[in-house]
Length: 143
Image 1 (cartoon, rainbow, N blue to C red):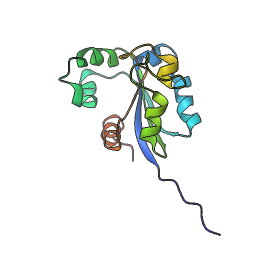
Image 2 (cartoon, rainbow, N blue to C red):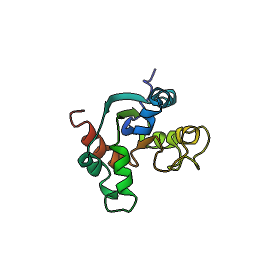
Image 3 (spheres, helix red, strand yellow):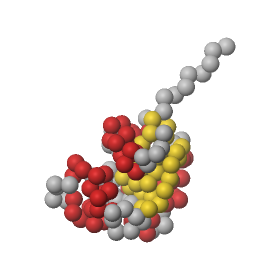
Image 4 (spheres, rainbow, N blue to C red):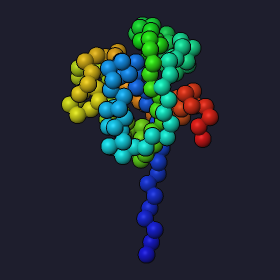
């Protein structure tokens, strides 16, 4: 009898932004990722400073929308998580829904729980390369 094929696994970074923490949605949001089949590899609540925000959002620092985004993500505690599973980057982005909660599909985190483009509850890495870079910023000791 042959061994079952192991599904390749990848990791991605998820941030539950200050609005998710403030609204008490951390448990509900994490449970959606777990219900989808993703595993939590690392989890930490923290408040970040402007330097980490700038490094995390480095591709956006010069954009007009960035200063309010930086003010928002540094405004209070957030929860950083590393999730793992088959095609984790794409699965998280699908579960999160469109960036603008007003346009996100029902059944997604943003579609069900957000009415904003900026205060949209969650961040998920947009590619495997971004996930690798972001996990290194947030969890430098994770192997």
